[in-house]
Amino acid sequence: MPIVKNSELPDDLVRKLREANRNLVIASLRAQDLQDQAEASVQRQTEFLSMLAHELRNPLAPIAMASEMLEKITSSHPQLPHSQQIITRQVSHMKRLLEDLLDASRISSGKITLQKAPLLLADMVHDAVELSEHSLTKRHQQLVIDLPLRPVVLNGDAVRLSQVFSNLLLNASKYSPPHKSIVLSARHLANGTVAISVKDEGVGIAADMQPLIFDLFTQVPRTLDRSDGGLGIGLSMVRTLVEMHDGAVQVRSQGLNCGSEFTVVLPVPTAVLALGAGPALPRQAARSCRILIVEDNVDANQTLNFCLAHEGHSVASAYNGPDGLAMAQKGGYDIVVTDIGLPGMNGYELLRQVQLLGLVPAPYCIAMTGYDQPGFQAHADEVGFDSYLVKPVSMETLQDVISKAFPAETPA
View: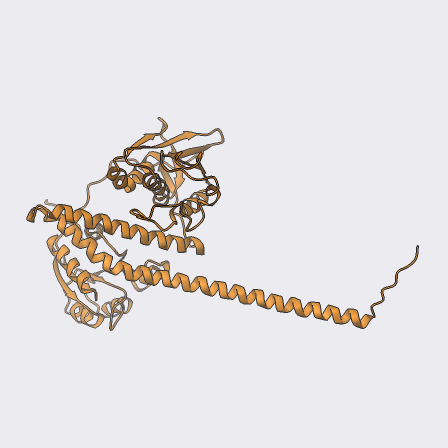
């Protein structure tokens, strides 16, 4: 067999090898540059969404509290209850859109964490139904619930799983005509799992859309009115949260106008810790406290002042950090409620300065802010805040915090 000699000289081979190495280095540098650009873009997006959330929460807070106060004085005018309910519904809708937007950011950056614990399937379904009840009632839709007779215990994050099924129920309601039925059912599977389905009689999903339905920002075609428009985030969150619970979700539809069925399969642990299923304890009442509010948003400050005074507390207000410190220095306050982003002195520095005053007893300090990132809360814990609340905060939540710190005296 004849031997074929390589006609290329060693110098030519070395030159080509060097050229290939140079191209490889250039490609590697370009890839690293693209990765750096992508990471910077994600970081800018996260920072923008965080700031957007903060700026949107600030106006939502006084609106939500004002609505709560309107509910307590509805006898003033026959139209007041109706107006108050409109405000409450729209604030809830805005808050939901905001949380969905932030959850999309958390999903893309992998920052969602779960607080798992044993929970009853029936309790989780009850919470999900409560979150979606308004939409069902408004459309006069009937919800049929079919759960196993024996209690089903899951190991999961109660809040996040309720979010999963409230999203599925809201979607079923949104895409179903009025007066139709929606069925939420659950059944045990042979492999130690439980399948929970939400089935509707709505517009259905075209075959070409079904593989994409769980992708972020994907929505089925809608009418132009978008009366209950969302962001195309809910189903993406459903898939992510279910997979974080070691489960799976799938959709089935025969096509347009044939309804749809979403099925979530979750593992059922063979052994779980005992559930604390005792009766709910009545809410602890709070004693009357002297409270200092430090909040630069005038509407938020005045509304919070009015709400706390209505609950029987003695309330004073400051609108910036230095004025808040000067008022705290006089002493006598049981509680200081402060925003984090304040003019003149931020909430962290305000707390440090209050601590340096050496007040006895030291006031109970509550951060009430639009920043919900873990870093802000961790910093608040480090500097010594006793409680950290993210706007909008309901009076019920705030009163619960106050009552735990300053319970009402019980008669001997």
